[in-house]
Image: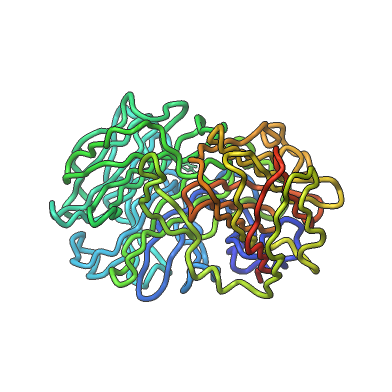
Length: 484
Ligand code: FRU
């Protein structure tokens, strides 16, 4: 009998154990699954191996939160069976009892990964504590498609049906159902459009409002073929009529997060209209090196929970993402480093020991104004000479991250060259950086440009250094919050 994750005791002193990101107590974690809100509780299930800290034996782990910040461990809910391991999928609340499992049942829709990949369902009548697999599983099969997985389901009110987005090799196929048990093919999307450097996985189709109008966004994770190598999440913006997704004419691929460590993220279902947010969480790793990161008892963390919005970045629409406001409850003492201007010198602006008693979990915010489009950088450093550097290049419209010297060595793919994101040049940039013991999440201009990158420094970073290519740089309201 394998121990439930919730029975393990661990302490946060473990070197790379994040202080405020969700990690399994013991074992391996990848994709977030089955995210659903019910009766004041946000459920997060996840790809989980309870037997060890590498991928395999996939179960659905489970955790819950009232505020998307503090997570309570729960026993895993779905274990492999004769149809196969339990791969990624989603969960819905069946308010109208369309499936006949009970009014308000929580229904999980997931991939059974055996010899073939097929889609199965399971229901919970006790608010997500335990699930019963449907005896008619699998509910959706295909004789020909090998990569056939990651069902994400929502209720589409105008066409009065459940709609499933499913990854089908290098396209997304949409299916419709009245009862979650019988599915009909609606349409297929993606041939010849977007990134095709790898297999398509973990789709999510959902509406977002822009200037009072509804737009539909389709997330598609892809591995490999990300903008900076390995796995990453691309998206399309368009319209969905209950049958077909029609993308707006834009220059695809667009990427949700140009950093290396935000994959397979999808959004919560059943979030009440009174909340109204489109809430997201991603897996903070990359298939390039996920199985080798230098942790022992567990592997991988989730990103912080984020809110998605459609915004115009000056050139085109983008899906912006920002930490949920509840995250501010983690802020402890604030250290005001203040305003600084550098004029015509070559000296860096340096803040040494900027957060005394630094445990490796903090948030940094500031506004920075370069001289026209002069490039500038800021870096976090430690006494071992390890550093992660952020380079803003307005002239080349690029925001690059250099983490090649940030961490202990563990995998050549991790110490890649610059991690680049397109960035529309602005007069000023607002910068928010969330740092935890093994991660950095950068949000520029309220999430218009995002870079999430794991780091494994041998000790915490405690120096902050700004530099410019030319002389002038203005910093305003440089603030550090200790988190937790
Ligand atoms: C994405 C993924 C999914 C699959 C799961 C298996 O990271 O490959 O496509 O369902 O992980 O753990």
